[in-house]
Length: 85
Image (cartoon, one colour):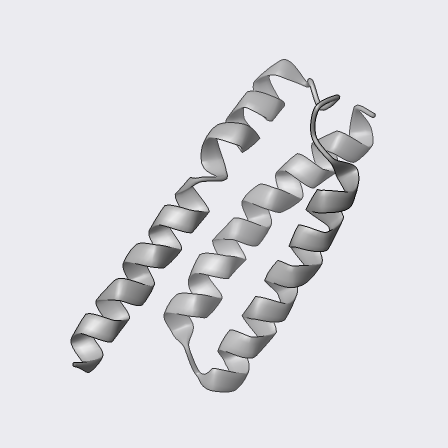
């Protein structure tokens, strides 16, 4: 049962993290951020930090790793939004 649970957690982490990659690449290439919500990405990055903290407290490395990568991708988008406002 634990192997299945971990596999599901890893799959979910890969999918939700990968979802940010196309937006990060597009934003990086075009430098266009007009249609990206600053408030949403600020709240999102704070939420991701909280998920990372929760994952550490629970000892859940798939949760920590997936959210750490997601934070990098969302952070890139947020940084570009702030730079190219």
